[in-house]
Length: 324
Image (cartoon, rainbow, N blue to C red):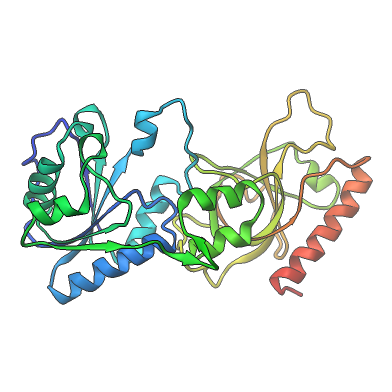
Protein backbone atom coordinates (compact mmCIF):
# COMPACT_ATOMS: atom_id res chain seq x y z
CA UNK A 1 0.00 0.00 0.00
CA UNK A 2 1.33 3.41 -0.99
CA UNK A 3 1.11 5.99 1.83
CA UNK A 4 1.19 9.72 1.02
CA UNK A 5 1.37 12.38 3.73
CA UNK A 6 -0.10 15.61 2.41
CA UNK A 7 0.57 18.93 4.14
CA UNK A 8 -1.98 21.63 3.35
CA UNK A 9 0.82 24.20 3.19
CA UNK A 10 2.12 22.42 0.10
CA UNK A 11 0.81 23.52 -3.30
CA UNK A 12 -2.15 21.54 -4.58
CA UNK A 13 0.01 20.07 -7.31
CA UNK A 14 2.53 18.56 -4.85
CA UNK A 15 1.44 15.15 -6.01
CA UNK A 16 -0.92 13.81 -8.62
CA UNK A 17 -1.88 10.19 -9.05
CA UNK A 18 -1.20 8.77 -12.47
CA UNK A 19 -3.92 6.13 -12.18
CA UNK A 20 -7.64 6.58 -11.64
CA UNK A 21 -8.93 6.12 -8.10
CA UNK A 22 -12.01 4.64 -6.54
CA UNK A 23 -11.92 6.94 -3.53
CA UNK A 24 -13.46 6.74 -0.08
CA UNK A 25 -13.04 9.42 2.58
CA UNK A 26 -13.16 9.30 6.37
CA UNK A 27 -11.17 8.81 9.55
CA UNK A 28 -11.51 5.00 9.73
CA UNK A 29 -10.70 4.87 13.43
CA UNK A 30 -11.11 1.22 14.37
CA UNK A 31 -12.03 0.24 10.79
CA UNK A 32 -15.37 -1.10 12.04
CA UNK A 33 -17.93 -2.91 9.89
CA UNK A 34 -19.39 0.39 8.70
CA UNK A 35 -15.97 1.43 7.42
CA UNK A 36 -15.54 -2.02 5.92
CA UNK A 37 -18.71 -1.51 3.87
CA UNK A 38 -17.33 1.74 2.46
CA UNK A 39 -14.13 -0.06 1.53
CA UNK A 40 -16.04 -2.97 0.00
CA UNK A 41 -17.96 -0.64 -2.33
CA UNK A 42 -14.78 1.25 -3.24
CA UNK A 43 -12.92 -2.01 -3.99
CA UNK A 44 -15.77 -3.31 -6.13
CA UNK A 45 -15.75 -0.18 -8.28
CA UNK A 46 -11.96 -0.21 -8.49
CA UNK A 47 -12.02 -3.75 -9.83
CA UNK A 48 -14.82 -2.98 -12.28
CA UNK A 49 -13.10 0.07 -13.76
CA UNK A 50 -9.46 -1.05 -13.38
CA UNK A 51 -8.75 1.70 -10.86
CA UNK A 52 -6.87 1.78 -7.57
CA UNK A 53 -8.68 1.75 -4.23
CA UNK A 54 -7.74 4.98 -2.44
CA UNK A 55 -8.52 6.25 1.05
CA UNK A 56 -8.32 9.90 2.08
CA UNK A 57 -8.09 10.35 5.84
CA UNK A 58 -7.17 13.18 8.21
CA UNK A 59 -4.68 13.82 11.01
CA UNK A 60 -5.59 15.09 13.50
CA UNK A 61 -9.26 14.19 13.56
CA UNK A 62 -11.22 17.37 12.61
CA UNK A 63 -13.08 17.21 15.92
CA UNK A 64 -9.74 17.26 17.76
CA UNK A 65 -8.57 20.22 15.72
CA UNK A 66 -11.63 22.36 16.36
CA UNK A 67 -11.99 21.29 20.01
CA UNK A 68 -8.46 20.57 21.31
CA UNK A 69 -9.74 20.63 24.89
CA UNK A 70 -11.82 17.53 24.14
CA UNK A 71 -9.83 14.30 24.22
CA UNK A 72 -11.01 11.83 21.57
CA UNK A 73 -9.86 8.32 22.54
CA UNK A 74 -8.41 6.45 19.58
CA UNK A 75 -9.50 2.92 18.76
CA UNK A 76 -6.37 2.51 16.67
CA UNK A 77 -2.71 3.24 17.12
CA UNK A 78 -1.42 4.93 13.94
CA UNK A 79 0.32 1.82 12.60
CA UNK A 80 -2.74 -0.31 13.31
CA UNK A 81 -4.82 1.86 10.99
CA UNK A 82 -2.28 1.46 8.21
CA UNK A 83 -2.20 -2.32 8.63
CA UNK A 84 -5.98 -2.55 8.77
CA UNK A 85 -6.47 -0.57 5.57
CA UNK A 86 -3.82 -2.64 3.82
CA UNK A 87 -5.56 -5.83 4.97
CA UNK A 88 -8.79 -4.40 3.55
CA UNK A 89 -7.24 -4.16 0.09
CA UNK A 90 -6.46 -0.44 -0.06
CA UNK A 91 -3.87 0.44 -2.72
CA UNK A 92 -3.16 4.06 -1.73
CA UNK A 93 -3.67 5.97 1.51
CA UNK A 94 -3.51 9.76 1.61
CA UNK A 95 -3.10 11.21 5.13
CA UNK A 96 -4.10 14.85 4.97
CA UNK A 97 -2.85 17.21 7.68
CA UNK A 98 -5.95 18.89 9.07
CA UNK A 99 -5.04 22.44 10.01
CA UNK A 100 -6.34 26.00 9.62
CA UNK A 101 -5.54 26.28 5.93
CA UNK A 102 -7.13 22.96 5.06
CA UNK A 103 -10.22 23.73 7.18
CA UNK A 104 -10.78 26.85 5.05
CA UNK A 105 -10.73 24.99 1.73
CA UNK A 106 -14.03 25.53 -0.05
CA UNK A 107 -16.13 22.49 -0.98
CA UNK A 108 -15.64 23.35 -4.65
CA UNK A 109 -11.84 23.42 -4.36
CA UNK A 110 -11.91 20.22 -2.29
CA UNK A 111 -13.96 18.50 -5.00
CA UNK A 112 -12.34 19.78 -8.17
CA UNK A 113 -8.71 20.26 -7.17
CA UNK A 114 -8.10 17.60 -4.53
CA UNK A 115 -10.59 14.83 -5.28
CA UNK A 116 -10.78 15.05 -9.07
CA UNK A 117 -7.44 16.50 -10.20
CA UNK A 118 -4.97 15.22 -7.63
CA UNK A 119 -6.56 11.95 -6.57
CA UNK A 120 -8.04 11.28 -10.04
CA UNK A 121 -11.24 9.95 -8.51
CA UNK A 122 -13.52 8.25 -11.01
CA UNK A 123 -15.73 7.22 -8.08
CA UNK A 124 -16.28 8.61 -4.58
CA UNK A 125 -17.86 6.52 -1.81
CA UNK A 126 -18.77 8.21 1.47
CA UNK A 127 -21.09 7.73 4.43
CA UNK A 128 -24.59 9.18 4.59
CA UNK A 129 -23.53 11.92 7.03
CA UNK A 130 -20.35 12.95 5.22
CA UNK A 131 -19.65 16.70 5.06
CA UNK A 132 -16.63 18.45 3.58
CA UNK A 133 -15.06 21.82 2.95
CA UNK A 134 -15.16 25.03 4.94
CA UNK A 135 -17.75 24.95 7.69
CA UNK A 136 -18.67 21.38 6.68
CA UNK A 137 -20.88 23.01 4.07
CA UNK A 138 -20.25 20.49 1.28
CA UNK A 139 -22.89 17.82 0.61
CA UNK A 140 -23.15 14.80 -1.66
CA UNK A 141 -25.20 16.82 -4.12
CA UNK A 142 -22.20 19.15 -4.46
CA UNK A 143 -19.96 16.26 -5.44
CA UNK A 144 -22.49 15.34 -8.10
CA UNK A 145 -22.61 18.92 -9.37
CA UNK A 146 -18.87 19.58 -9.48
CA UNK A 147 -17.83 16.05 -10.48
CA UNK A 148 -20.30 15.22 -13.27
CA UNK A 149 -18.15 12.41 -14.67
CA UNK A 150 -17.59 10.79 -11.27
CA UNK A 151 -19.65 7.99 -9.75
CA UNK A 152 -20.86 9.23 -6.36
CA UNK A 153 -22.01 6.63 -3.84
CA UNK A 154 -23.66 7.16 -0.49
CA UNK A 155 -23.48 4.30 2.00
CA UNK A 156 -26.30 4.44 4.53
CA UNK A 157 -26.22 3.56 8.20
CA UNK A 158 -24.89 0.08 8.90
CA UNK A 159 -26.77 -1.77 11.63
CA UNK A 160 -25.62 -4.66 13.79
CA UNK A 161 -28.19 -6.26 16.09
CA UNK A 162 -30.41 -3.17 15.63
CA UNK A 163 -27.57 -0.87 16.71
CA UNK A 164 -26.06 1.80 14.47
CA UNK A 165 -22.38 1.07 13.91
CA UNK A 166 -20.09 3.99 14.76
CA UNK A 167 -16.74 4.62 16.43
CA UNK A 168 -18.46 6.58 19.21
CA UNK A 169 -20.77 3.65 20.00
CA UNK A 170 -17.79 1.30 20.16
CA UNK A 171 -16.06 3.67 22.59
CA UNK A 172 -19.16 3.64 24.82
CA UNK A 173 -19.13 -0.17 24.87
CA UNK A 174 -15.44 -0.19 25.82
CA UNK A 175 -16.11 2.34 28.57
CA UNK A 176 -18.70 -0.01 30.07
CA UNK A 177 -16.69 -3.27 29.68
CA UNK A 178 -19.05 -4.51 26.95
CA UNK A 179 -16.18 -5.99 24.96
CA UNK A 180 -18.33 -8.48 23.03
CA UNK A 181 -20.65 -5.71 21.84
CA UNK A 182 -17.65 -3.60 20.82
CA UNK A 183 -16.11 -6.52 18.94
CA UNK A 184 -19.39 -7.22 17.14
CA UNK A 185 -19.38 -3.67 15.73
CA UNK A 186 -15.66 -3.83 14.96
CA UNK A 187 -16.03 -7.14 13.14
CA UNK A 188 -12.93 -8.36 14.98
CA UNK A 189 -11.38 -8.60 18.44
CA UNK A 190 -10.23 -5.32 19.96
CA UNK A 191 -6.45 -5.22 19.60
CA UNK A 192 -4.07 -3.68 22.13
CA UNK A 193 -0.36 -3.51 21.34
CA UNK A 194 2.65 -2.41 23.30
CA UNK A 195 6.01 -3.35 24.77
CA UNK A 196 6.49 -5.53 27.84
CA UNK A 197 7.96 -3.48 30.68
CA UNK A 198 9.57 -4.49 33.96
CA UNK A 199 7.19 -3.95 36.86
CA UNK A 200 7.29 -4.62 40.61
CA UNK A 201 7.37 -8.38 39.90
CA UNK A 202 4.66 -8.98 42.48
CA UNK A 203 2.85 -11.48 40.30
CA UNK A 204 5.67 -13.99 40.29
CA UNK A 205 5.70 -14.00 44.12
CA UNK A 206 2.12 -15.31 44.20
CA UNK A 207 2.55 -17.75 41.31
CA UNK A 208 1.07 -15.62 38.52
CA UNK A 209 3.85 -13.71 36.73
CA UNK A 210 2.46 -10.90 34.60
CA UNK A 211 3.76 -8.92 31.66
CA UNK A 212 3.30 -5.20 32.23
CA UNK A 213 2.43 -3.57 28.93
CA UNK A 214 2.96 0.03 27.90
CA UNK A 215 0.10 0.94 25.57
CA UNK A 216 0.42 4.29 23.80
CA UNK A 217 -2.07 6.45 21.90
CA UNK A 218 -4.96 4.03 22.23
CA UNK A 219 -8.12 3.77 24.28
CA UNK A 220 -8.18 1.16 27.03
CA UNK A 221 -11.39 -0.64 28.01
CA UNK A 222 -12.87 0.05 31.44
CA UNK A 223 -10.87 -1.27 34.38
CA UNK A 224 -11.36 -4.94 35.11
CA UNK A 225 -10.26 -8.43 34.16
CA UNK A 226 -10.43 -9.61 30.55
CA UNK A 227 -9.27 -12.59 28.54
CA UNK A 228 -8.16 -13.16 25.00
CA UNK A 229 -5.15 -14.12 22.93
CA UNK A 230 -1.59 -12.82 22.98
CA UNK A 231 1.00 -12.82 20.21
CA UNK A 232 4.63 -11.98 20.97
CA UNK A 233 5.48 -10.03 17.85
CA UNK A 234 5.20 -6.69 16.04
CA UNK A 235 2.72 -5.89 13.29
CA UNK A 236 0.24 -8.65 14.04
CA UNK A 237 -2.77 -8.91 11.72
CA UNK A 238 -5.66 -6.68 12.74
CA UNK A 239 -8.53 -8.80 11.45
CA UNK A 240 -7.27 -12.35 11.96
CA UNK A 241 -5.73 -13.75 15.13
CA UNK A 242 -2.59 -15.73 14.21
CA UNK A 243 -2.54 -19.49 14.73
CA UNK A 244 0.45 -19.20 17.11
CA UNK A 245 -1.63 -17.26 19.64
CA UNK A 246 -1.31 -17.74 23.39
CA UNK A 247 -4.36 -17.71 25.69
CA UNK A 248 -4.08 -14.97 28.27
CA UNK A 249 -5.82 -13.14 31.05
CA UNK A 250 -5.41 -9.39 31.39
CA UNK A 251 -6.02 -6.92 34.19
CA UNK A 252 -6.56 -3.24 33.45
CA UNK A 253 -6.61 -1.26 36.65
CA UNK A 254 -4.99 0.38 39.64
CA UNK A 255 -4.36 -2.77 41.76
CA UNK A 256 -6.39 -1.53 44.77
CA UNK A 257 -5.32 -4.53 46.89
CA UNK A 258 -1.66 -3.44 46.71
CA UNK A 259 -0.43 -0.59 48.89
CA UNK A 260 0.82 2.23 46.65
CA UNK A 261 1.84 5.83 47.21
CA UNK A 262 0.39 6.93 43.88
CA UNK A 263 -1.90 4.40 42.16
CA UNK A 264 -1.13 4.05 38.48
CA UNK A 265 -3.28 2.60 35.73
CA UNK A 266 -1.57 -0.61 34.57
CA UNK A 267 -2.15 -3.18 31.86
CA UNK A 268 -0.93 -6.57 33.10
CA UNK A 269 -1.18 -9.82 31.21
CA UNK A 270 -0.65 -13.38 32.44
CA UNK A 271 0.04 -15.95 29.71
CA UNK A 272 -1.97 -19.08 30.48
CA UNK A 273 0.20 -21.55 28.57
CA UNK A 274 3.90 -21.91 27.81
CA UNK A 275 7.13 -21.69 29.78
CA UNK A 276 9.04 -18.42 29.89
CA UNK A 277 12.34 -17.49 31.48
CA UNK A 278 12.15 -15.20 34.50
CA UNK A 279 13.17 -12.06 32.61
CA UNK A 280 12.88 -13.33 29.06
CA UNK A 281 9.85 -11.24 28.02
CA UNK A 282 11.10 -7.77 28.96
CA UNK A 283 11.34 -5.46 25.96
CA UNK A 284 9.39 -7.76 23.65
CA UNK A 285 6.45 -6.49 21.62
CA UNK A 286 3.07 -8.00 22.46
CA UNK A 287 -0.32 -7.91 20.75
CA UNK A 288 -3.45 -8.77 22.75
CA UNK A 289 -6.76 -9.61 21.10
CA UNK A 290 -9.38 -9.03 23.79
CA UNK A 291 -12.39 -11.32 23.48
CA UNK A 292 -14.26 -11.32 26.81
CA UNK A 293 -14.78 -9.45 30.06
CA UNK A 294 -14.51 -11.62 33.18
CA UNK A 295 -15.16 -9.25 36.08
CA UNK A 296 -14.74 -5.71 37.30
CA UNK A 297 -11.86 -4.40 39.39
CA UNK A 298 -12.16 -5.26 43.08
CA UNK A 299 -10.18 -4.69 46.25
CA UNK A 300 -9.40 -7.85 48.22
CA UNK A 301 -8.49 -8.32 51.87
CA UNK A 302 -4.92 -9.36 51.12
CA UNK A 303 -2.58 -11.18 48.74
CA UNK A 304 -3.93 -14.63 49.65
CA UNK A 305 -7.47 -13.61 48.70
CA UNK A 306 -6.14 -12.00 45.53
CA UNK A 307 -4.22 -15.18 44.66
CA UNK A 308 -7.34 -17.32 45.05
CA UNK A 309 -9.34 -14.95 42.86
CA UNK A 310 -6.69 -15.00 40.14
CA UNK A 311 -6.92 -18.81 40.15
CA UNK A 312 -10.66 -18.53 39.58
CA UNK A 313 -10.19 -15.85 36.92
CA UNK A 314 -7.61 -17.96 35.09
CA UNK A 315 -9.90 -20.98 35.05
CA UNK A 316 -12.79 -18.81 33.83
CA UNK A 317 -10.55 -17.49 31.06
CA UNK A 318 -9.51 -20.99 29.98
CA UNK A 319 -13.12 -22.13 29.93
CA UNK A 320 -14.20 -19.08 27.93
CA UNK A 321 -11.36 -19.49 25.43
CA UNK A 322 -11.82 -23.26 25.15
CA UNK A 323 -8.40 -24.14 26.58
CA UNK A 324 -7.64 -27.27 28.60
